Length: 131
Image 1 (tube, rainbow, N blue to C red):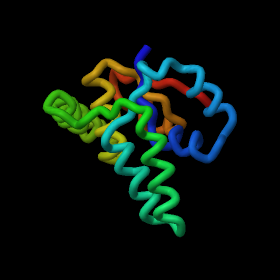
Image 2: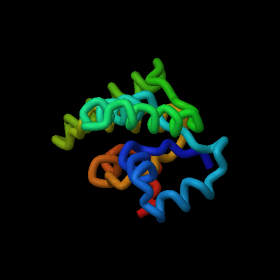
Image 3: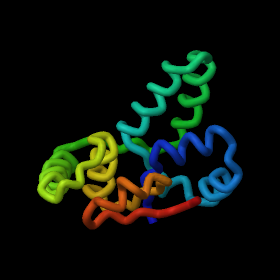
Image 4: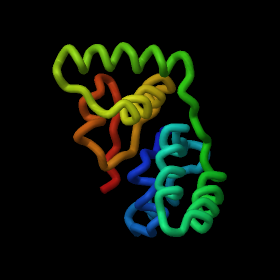
């Protein structure tokens, strides 16, 4: 099963959280994806840190192992439809989380995240819990 790894899980891996390291390492690499949005969140974290160069190098090497999904036309349509639905229900979530979910939905992938509060609100999204 193809999975999109959310930023929080990527960060847990980079920090050496053993349960995440084990699960991610056991998952077939050809089935592991992340999104341009998640990459952006990781890059922001690096630029916002005290060790910019060290963190940028670590992130760059780590992401070389991932397929990175872009926010394409299909994801854009999914985003717009889902955001309108969430707004009508008074249940909006952060746009970046919705963009990640939209990319996963457009590709029919599940999302691995610890942020269930937001991702569980997305209609039709498969959410995996690794923690």
